[in-house]
Image (tube, rainbow, N blue to C red; front, side):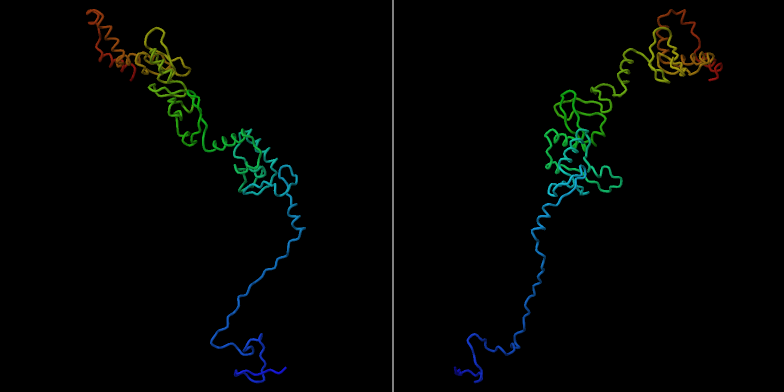
Length: 313
């Protein structure tokens, strides 16, 4: 078949086909720069076989408590130690700790370790994987709050509440946490504090003070032993072993502390001259006596000087 040349300026010996692009053998025009096509890097990974998938599903772990093997999907791994346990062992371990009122609940492996820097612990989130009873969950919450708070109960209204542990440690007197109850008690001895009473003391001496003042009894000024005068004069000798204190029962002041009889009389005479309570009593006696008795009263200042010279005071 003969080809017929067209009116174009192409050479006569060149054959053109409809599917053949024109200027196929000519270089690209210099006015248009060449554009590099983007290169795509493909990473070829080995295809997982059915054997690999089956082995992954069958992977097991060893429980660190019972040492049995379980599927990896059932493992309870604690943070940050990553020790693995089965849920049955963890449930029994947590229940035992709650019965013993021990909190927090550490990792059982880290708890027996000697050089554990960052031990793991069982948190509240792990409880969702355990079949704890409602009572055990309430116990967990109570112990968890006890880490930062203290559970107190009011004896009057019989209600209880949690209060901040640090705030309670700084209190000497505790007020009922409920506003409609005015009960107050001592944190150290748990005794009730009644407003308007003398300052509270845990040893009960505040009650003894009130009784002593009511009965007119006196404390020994040296050893603080309570003493009641049954009869006789106001010169009292403390009977507490080793005290040896002579004091005035009327004013409560010490006269002398000695075991020598020769030192007692001068000190006693000197105390009577300076004791306001004794002078008040003596004045009452003098006012009731007749004039003849009052004229025999001695010169007080001269007697004081004589006693001082005799006793060496």
